[in-house]
Image (cartoon, rainbow, N blue to C red; front, side, top):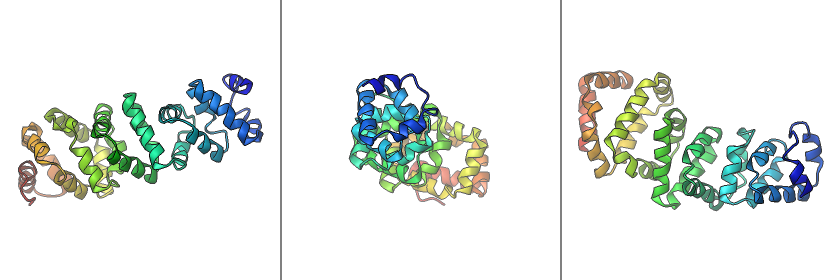
Length: 259
């Protein structure tokens, strides 16, 4: 308990050698005291200092909320990806559920960029076992943050059933949300270039195919699709003539086969 108290006032970097020389069971006991006291900032500062094996054990001792909060304050966020590997799928689901319960999806989405492909895939699959409202919370956070650049590499690795879940949430039934997404994508030229380089335009067809009838009907109310400038821009991005792009957009809205 004394070590837990003084850990609030010491510099983790300057005491790293001492911390790493402490017995594992002592470090774990100190961590338990800090978790019970909700000292997430302190725990986050020591994530980069303690042995990864010990840090992984600390994660297994924490609740979903405690793991989430500690991750927000991790000084070395790159290490969060490796620590996620120490968690079972059930424990990972607890973290995602905690983000929903605490309405902290914005903060959670900001951590996605620090996770590797395996952790991102596990997180997305976790959504399938939770209440659909959780998936809607994730989409709302992405919309609020305009985090399309961060989301792009992740979407390309999602399983079809996860894509179907995410695109058919209540948030995407609002034509204004779709309009806002289009405007954000058009304003981020580097995002379009990255999508082209990663070969994700073909994936967009799969995304539209995953829409249910109710969500596809919303596309008819998205005025941007009728904008000649957007049609010309989209044709240039996809490398087709404008007439083909107009036919493609009409097909996407009606559910007909793409040209």
